[in-house]
Length: 123
Image (cartoon, rainbow, N blue to C red; front, side, top):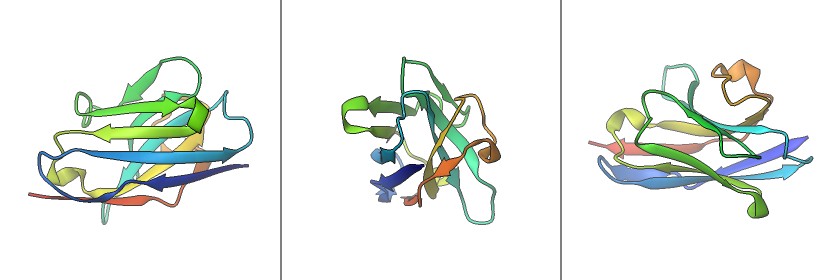
């Protein structure tokens, strides 16, 4: 089992930055991929970014590429999502997930989820 706990959400203005954290616990994570998804009201869960616990490979959705950066701290078992130049359309609940492949953009392909953290961007 893998337990994931997100933090760092909040209310910000358009153009601001925010950093989300995802603390992971449980079984060995070295072979896992870690992902960030988001879900806006009335919409499905959307892939945002992902990274492997080992190595430097990462992957981003087109909507956040160049604005968001995913990173990890292996010593702290924590994955981060640095969000810059936030827009109103980034408003959503952000979820951390653990899975097998960073290129899986469908939420059904990810096996473990956190409870989510709300990000609200006012325009």
